[in-house]
Length: 105
Image (cartoon, rainbow, N blue to C red; front, side, top):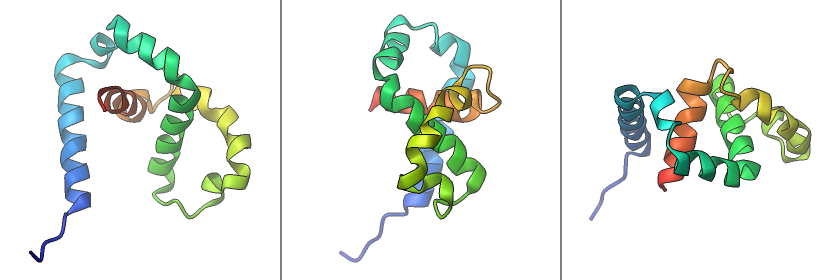
């Protein structure tokens, strides 16, 4: 057939579902799950930089900037802990959903 997948719509629907779950259950309640927290700790070597990337992607609205340049990524990876800390302004809206989705993949 001649069909196309509407990726932006699918991603938006996925985002709405994840936000709905985290709102209904509560981010703090989700982070009380010992298996979830253990998984985050076991995977933070790639998970934190990925979540930091998602934080910056949301701020930049584009991958066409120096932050995403592979030659500078190693320098920026040091910023991941601050960008993904529970006290960061983007924790509930970006970081927690990233962790939640990656855990359930």
